[in-house]
Amino acid sequence: MADLAVRCAGVSLRTPFLLASGVWGESGESLAQAWNAGAGGVITKSIGSAPRPGYPNPTIEAYEHWGLLNAMGLPNPGIDEYPREVEVARRAGATVIGSVFAGDPEEFARLAARMAATGVSALELNLSCPHAEGFGAEVGGTPADVEKVVRAVTRAVNLPVIAKITPNTSDPASLALAAERGGASAVSAINTLRALAIDVRLRRPVLSHGLGGLSGRAIKPVGLACVWQIFEKVKIPVLGVGGIANAEDALEYVMAGARAVEVGTQVTFDGIGVFGRLAHDLSTLLDELGFARVEDAVGVAHRTSSVPPG
Amino acid sequence: MRSVVAVTERVVETPSTVTLRFPYPAAADPGQFVMVWFPGDDELPMSLSYTDGPSKGITVKAIGGTSRRAQATRVGDRVGVRGPYGDRFDLSPRKVLIVSGGSGSAALAPAAERVCAAGGSVTVALGATRAPELLFKERFRAMGANVEVATDDGSEGTKGFVTAVAERLLASEPFDTVWTCGPEVMMKKVALAASARKIPVFCSTERHMKCALGMCDACALGPFHVCVDGPVFPAQRLLPLEEFGSSHRDSSGRRVPL
Image 1 (tube, each protein chain N blue to C red):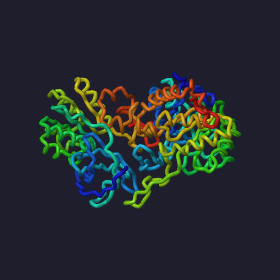
Image 2: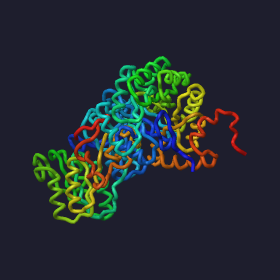
Image 3: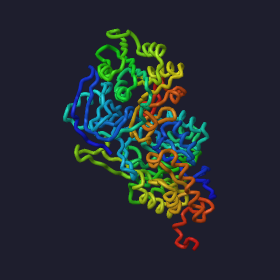
Image 4: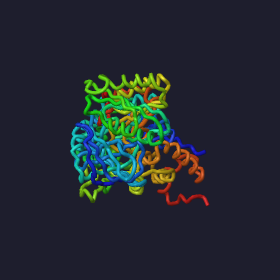
């Protein structure tokens, strides 16, 4: 049976499947459940300095099984309240990665230090939320911004820092390189794609905020392209995220260069049991393809001489 | 995902509640809810107060800004509807006690109708602050249920809380099951009283909702999500939870007292 354990950004993961930020991550009990369902680690909801209610509803539009469009607006209870949730998850034994977002490098650094103090194993910086003004993509849209934020954070904490990269850019690799220069231990790619839905009868956008972020199976090819380009440029590990619905999708990301992957939207369609299924199926697939460990498959699609044994 | 439909009927049920009917053919069962978008305003979870047939209904109680404006919806206005979502009442019991407070009758009345139509017996302990707010009192009587009323101000029925009426009824008759919907503090009292008598009790709960698809955690209730694991829960799932009847999360996810 193939070995699914991986070490990524200084964190040991029992499987390469992490719960992505934004799904089930507001409550410690939910994080614990995702862990108990077999996730290799759980990433929290993106937490800010103060509580945010997020945008009014409608905040979501679902497309059969291939996509979700959301403009939640980063609702979160704020860093003052969040330690309790991390504590509940950690009591269940979970490996927790804390996601944070802020409006400038100094705020990011203060927030990161507070999240680090809750007992998380690593931090993931939300530099790429496409629909919250002043946060996310406006803060992390240029390499200079990314480098400043990451440097401020890595100076403020002793934990591994993962920078989550936006796909809403023509050059994701340059953002990843900037994160690497700033001291990031890893990058994750991608966050949601900037997207929109309109109701033709009401002649208005469906979501209250208008623009939102697209996730789910539809974005997998875009996520794969970003991971591919980033892997070619950076030395630090890459985590792949975007539209993973089955083990083959995950292995595509691994072969594109990811050491671990994050799963979010598919939890909505399949339930939290998706983590058990993905781990089981990936193990079977690796066996079938002749890989003893997940780590042996990282980036193999970049080596044009890696033709499978006949 | 959403159907945009025009409201076909508006019925004033009480000074603070209005029923809105609209065409929505998707099959639905008592206990389920829909997310209703009042364009330009908000989208709220609403129990289906009329579940059968191509025309569905919701019964809106004016509580906050959006529900007040929703109440003002007129025939011909358009709303966006998605769902139904959530878990249903098990309709197999033959002798049911219903305990309703606040606008709880909205979720409970269609379930009661199914039991009565199947030949079962329904007793309703119906509570409100004052007599005009007793929601669906006539609807319950018309379906053949035995209705006992409690009002806070004594303007009708027993003066006091509906939980006292419920406890008296539980002591005097052998019910198969208890269904309750209303303020959570009330539901917890009912759940404890029925459980003490080993009678199965089901609570129709509510929490803030955003996605209603089991993704965003807004409606987290202990280890459950009200949108996919509820809103109807057996009491044995709820009573062990510290937050049941005492706290919930606000729209930012902060825990606040009920």
